[in-house]
Amino acid sequence: MTLAWVSKASKIVILAIWGLIVSIPLLILVSVTVKSPQDLLYTTLGFPKVFMWGNFAEAWKTASLGMAFGNSIVITGLAVVGLVLASSFAAYPLARVKSKFTSTMFLYFISGIMVPFQLSMIPLYKLLKFLHLINTHQGVILIFIAMSIPFSIFLYTGFLKGIPKELEESAYMDGCGPFRTFAIIIFPLMKPVTASVIITNSLSIWNDFLVPLLFLQAKTSRTIPMAIFTFTGQYNNSWNMIFAAILLGTLPLVITFLFLQKHFIKGLVGGAVKG
Image 1 (tube, rainbow, N blue to C red):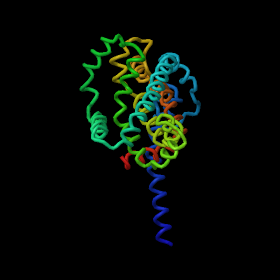
Image 2: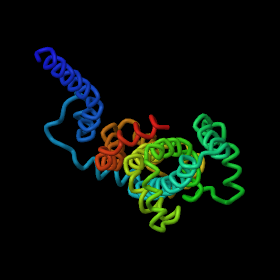
Image 3: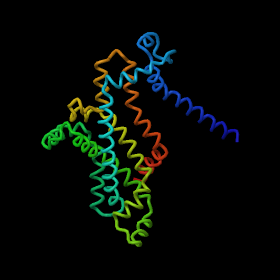
Image 4: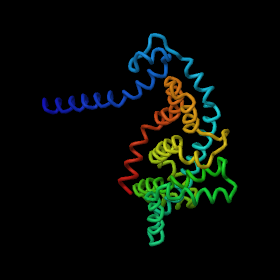
């Protein structure tokens, strides 16, 4: 009993220390954000006596974060919705139908994980220019969906293999077709892996800098990373303003993770292990 208690206590202490270490950058980010330029001259660590909450409003206005937020929300939201629909529908027959064709298609999709985006930048740019999709949300959304489908199909396929086929057989006996069975019975059961797909891809798409830099050249099309990058170049000495813009840009991701965190690990591990 004593050894078990010591082992449990040591794990808690180690995790607490590790959590403190990991939280240090966040604490520095918050402390710098609410400081005045004069306070930054004396110390970076620690919180000031007077909190400069106006830094958030100033950063929001000067960096045009409102417009950038709108662009990022539209692009990330539509890309994730399209990705969830496309990858879940594609993974369903790959997991349920056993044939050489589905096995080949699964390997084809998974091979996309190994192809870096830098290898396809020039062909993609030429394709979007030919389709007149440069400086449009539609073009960037399609690129993000195509880039994210391989890993999402991998997760969905692995998770679907762990769902008993008897559920579908019962639905077929009740007169449900394949599409209705998937929509009403199977898809709701995939909530954990769907949460994992949403979180991982929302993080990736929201923080992506290279794709918007290449395909969204207009100022009115800037996303959060591009707006912060431009703002940093203009205010390279005002670290409190820069950190305020960064903190505002990360808030939607933190909120999304807090809402979906209980499903995240379960879906990620379930999809990867069974796959």
